Image 1: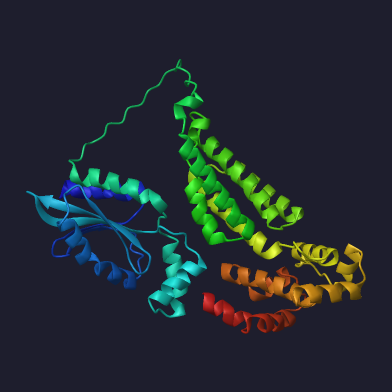
Image 2: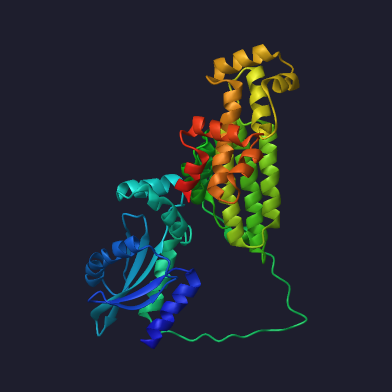
Length: 400
């Protein structure tokens, strides 16, 4: 049992995923966990024990079982044998194979018939979990090898030398890919850029995982620099795709510059992973929110002004003066093309930003009203209720 516990600790520390050992009567022997799992999810996990045991009991000892429950929580299980007899299993999880989004969480609530009050507790827990994507397959193979075979103690050695040999130059042909591999990757890249162009965030995330490969060989001995270079490339491609989607250069330049600085400042591979997903999200949202393609010059110019400066004290007259059109012409063309007045559009943008700040939970409602461009607290509260149907205080209460 000491050896088994040692193996479980190794898995827990290596992958930062909970590890549980369960005997054939489903009694827990060990459970290495951060102990933050909501009780409803604990009960859901217990409900899958029987199916996992049945599957592992009928398989050979080198098999593993993968299961995703109704809460979209995934688990890996490996059987424990003694004298070729099934004695229990090692359960690794929960972990995620999808990114946590509001849509993802609302679908879980709907599927499991949970009240909306579960949204925030589940969001907090899910965001604490490891996201594995397709790497769970590699981890499964390691899990089988760790659990099935005897544990070997490793020995640490350090080498010090003033005349260490230089790093050998890596030749491109050492990492050649077949024509089919290259073709598939570029097709995946094309699909990814298409989803950026149309602002489809969810599918862009999935497509990105398909074409983002390991290019560490391009900078031998410095995988962080290699990944940074790839992130810079993704930034450029996403900017061009969002431009084709109708986003104006001013917005694209601001987004591109921001992420270029963040990429260069990153100090860890995991930080770059987070930056890449944030980058995809922001470019897609720019296509959704800042596209001015297909509008007349006056409306296009007005949209750019509002989207850039809605937090400032702008008016229909100040926008008209800035873009060089008459106030009446601007108001008429904007209503014709947008089916909303200029003032109502400004209010809509300000309330969208206010909602975002409320969900962050860092500022008071008064401070948020001022930050998004309202000079009066009472006026902010009135417009918030007009747009959202509930007061800012009520909305904050729902999200807490």
